[in-house]
Length: 206
Image (cartoon, rainbow, N blue to C red; front, side):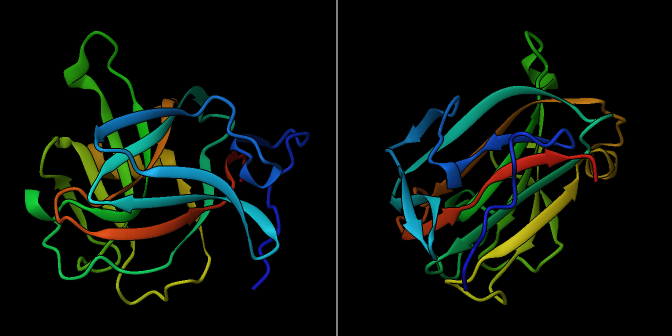
């Protein structure tokens, strides 16, 4: 399968955060939790993407950007994983690992306990569509399985989420902005190894 770029930085109906297909990592900062997942831009399927290699470690990349959801309510991205992490209980601390995940964060500022995040994950054992609170952060970080063990590996999957609707569903709140988007491939709790790829990430009007 040939993956073509879905974004154009010049189009007014899109706000591009991750133009990986253009070889750009501008504004993406590392966030290290336990060891460092290796992130690098690399060609695959005749386009450049962000590759993540994790060996019993957990670190991510964060882009702190205020996004006006009244103009750009939809988050779009593509991702693929090259192998699975196995039979992990994702509702336990020892199984809180994911081959790929995308965070959307609403900051509480100094009131850090008011910070909320949705974690869109490629789950290991949880069924597609399942929602649960993160075992470390509780209900401040809600998990949503967009992909699971039933999805093929080494195959690009394309996602589009209405962030306003998802926050309303998961937190019961009407939000107008988000403050950051992050991605992470992590294997520290289960001591596993995985490779994943992330395509371009952007917000859109529709």
